[in-house]
Amino acid sequence: METYFNHINGEWTESSTAERFDNRNPANWNEIIGTFPKSDKKDVDAAVRSARSAYSDWRLTPAPKRGEYLKVVGDIMTERKEELARLMTREMGKVLKETRGDVQEGIDTAYYAATEGRRLFGRNAPSEMPNKVNLTFRMPIGVAGIITPWNFPMAIPTWKIFPALVCGNTVVFKPASDTPATATEFVKILLEAGIPPNVVNIVHGTGSGVGAPIVNHPDINVISFTGSSAVGKSIAASCGTQLKRVSLELGGKNAQIVMDDADLDLALDGVLWGAFGTTGQRCTETSRIILHKKIYDTFIDKLVVRTEALKLGNGLNEDAEVGPFINEGQRETVEKYVEIGKKEGADILCGGERAESGDLADGFFYKPTIFGGVDQNMTIAQEEIFGPVLSVIKIGSLEEAISVLNNSIYGLSSSIYTWDINSAFTAMRDIEAGITYVNGPTIGAECHMPFGGMKETGNGHREGGWEVYEFYSETKTIYVDFSGKLQKAQIDNR
Image (cartoon, rainbow, N blue to C red; front, side, top):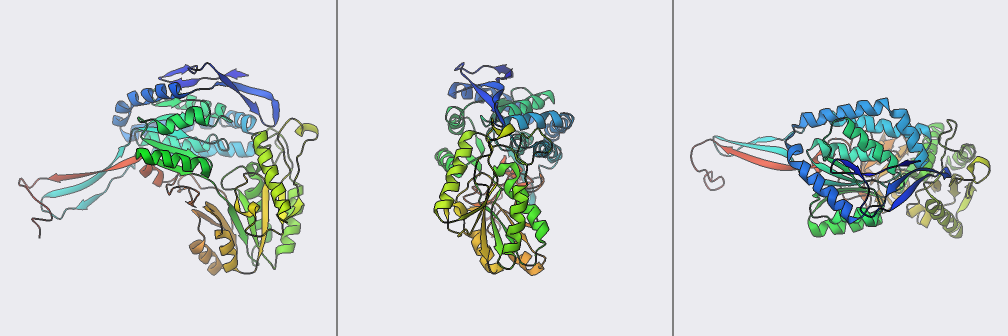
């Protein structure tokens, strides 16, 4: 067990409350990974002062130089990939092959961000007046408040913090209290790479104790949050009263369509990964599968056999395929939804119960669950469950499939399996989601592509790719008049 601290004003320090909380292994709740400071508003105030003090120098550091720091970060993460993956598995549960992927996503994002330091392009446009030049530049905003979830404790912080830094902002970072160790190691790597100590500050604690003070702090200029839609709405309201820029990456109720001409084995591999990877605890999880009636029975039979064969276990075991829930509360939430599904008339085809025997006894394990006979308006087909629960819905046409998929308040990731090019392009056009895969599962995005959703999945901003650099910077328009006389634009040229 290790004792961890906040990093504020260039130092590793205890919280002002002197209170601490334990970080435990969800696969073995008896194992304490470390203890962390339970901070409050005073610690946030100190972190903001630190970030603000560093801003004037950091914003004047040339953007290519800021990017070079992140190249070093990527190199260090590459060297420590296995170590970071094993720590992440211990504190949040998902299996090693996934935590290795989580770290690799951070590595890829680091190298991409490093190159963006040389591509913070502005634009120029011809002036309507003679001897005059029109230009735009990308300018930093100030201090960025970063609030991240526990399910991707390395990848998501890199999506947010790297572009914030490249654009010239400084950072106050609140990681999820379920995965604070990975976040702390990440900050240590940033410092080891040479990023000035006051530029990045990390404050551990609860949403009410740390998250809310970050959102409402007058000297934090931009907020990026990933989490539930309910919390996101509250953050949006708070930022709205402050006219504060905010990016929200929220819930999902993602669906995979399988048409009657699809490669069923390929579609089966896709839904198993999309529905039960990360124990279903990701915003891109496949929680609905929409099957054409001609292949419904055949596909269901294969799906149940493959699902029941998935091996649950401690993620540190190389043969484990499904890990535990992050905590008991999350498991209980999923159990409530399973009971709701039964009461509403859906049929459990497999799973639907805890897995607590043998090596699973001390963790929060639950069998991957499939509901058949689901109506598109049932609760389990409408609300985000955030667990390994898949609802199967039967349809008879492409138009019906798209209509069912769009029958959701969310619109993050989506998928269609078909070899018909017309069906594929119709789905790409008509599906209401920020991401659509053709012959692939409802997963996330590559680091150089925009990630985000429509409707209640967010507020329109994107993470990843080139768009996130626009979020973390302001456009400044410059006019240079070298005519030597007063030119009054619309007055003089008409």
